[in-house]
Image (cartoon, rainbow, N blue to C red; front, side, top):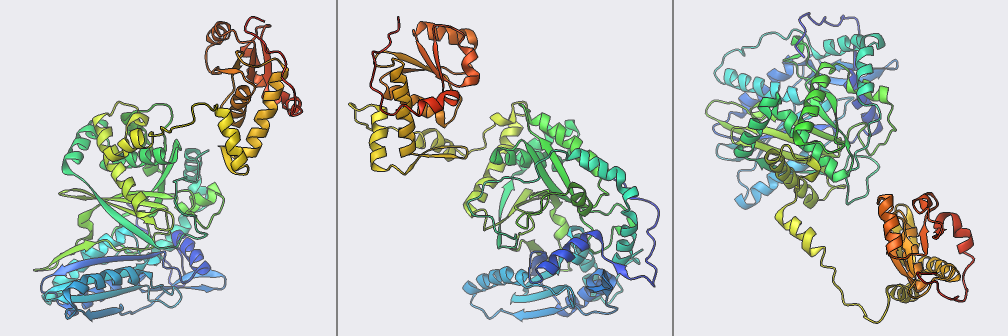
Length: 619
């Protein structure tokens, strides 16, 4: 959406600064758990070169003085949550000299600090809500760590912060004024303006679109987990990295450019296809952060303005990769046109079931960003960002793709309580393989595209199918089941959906059916048709026929009628075990039919029936 031309008015001086809608949600969460570090944002840079720490410190304070969001705390006054902006403020800045550490221990010590530092909570009532740490690790070698609360910061803020810090450092180093133009407004003006924009009347069309777009969508992503889901989502997190090579990206660009697709849309489509394959869900919701700066007055601000768009993709039928790409493109363009609805208002409109263990509406996030947005440019210095481990409680899965000259670097963030590292490593590898296979086969149904490694394919085709076992040759299947029932009568032998059956129950019911069939004349040489949908009763029917001495003939209820009639005639079947609603498949008057669902009350009375004369195929 193009930025709007009219200016955002400044907040009247006699009016308290309200919270923005996004801040209101985080303020509520903070009051529920003030010690949680879930919404801490941490970034770090390795700085090599002749860094001047005093110039760096002064530069940071110039940025704090420029942006009121970085000088803000929060209070509740007369039942209203408000921002409190400090007129002056010096940013907390710690310096540590670790250059004397043993080189073998130094990097491990830095890694430990980068894990622990983001977990230190902020006090939103008293502040400060940001802090800096500079570690000197050697001659002309430093690590800068910046931690800030999400209440006053977001992704675009980080881009603005890096640009301004680079400008401030260079100007201050040379004793020059920083070439900043005055900000047209401050964050408190934005919050006041936003609150005036979110009336029901002004947002009616936006709400209507999103409710229609998400009607009937599953608001829970059932990604399989090895662990029990914790009651809240603030547990420890981890991340891993992966790489999409320039060759793969070049091939992807050649495929998508004629379709009018962006790289974001294509990589998102692959992410959603993989989530569908992992979960078995065909209707996938993924969130993506969008800057939320639809007005020129907001472009240079530091503050919490980011919005979340919910992107929905249906993977039903047999769509090809090109089909899914087209759908994702249309969805994204429509979402961009309706991005003004704050995510908080969308949650209010959808009214999802509240669950403290899950993020509302979306639990998976995908984003694409430029690596250059995170660079610091200091004279005679090289400063490279690197990821910081964090608590990823906001979402179940967060994939970030970072565009570089050398290709795309991927980052996958996830809660360790839910997903082991090995599972996420497989997920990342499956993403890479799936992308390559989809590019190579864009017109093949996506459900038929394999994303498994060679090792996994071999394991599924051969290792897991190595089921050969030597069984006694003189004992029938139903006899083996009965012998096992004598050894472990209460062990679970059969699971179907929510139904669990023990050996005792299975053999009891199979015996009842066998005796009932014997009473109808079933015995050796008698063929009995078994036409039953997949269920526990199907297994009871099979064992019951064998135990009665008959030979079962499988009859698939999905077969055409003519085929079923030919099979029953050709096999000379006198009796069919089936279900009541399938009896119409066998209209022959010569066939006796036993419907397990309808007739079970009668079958259950047959426990000790003596065999009668067997039926024959010609009787």
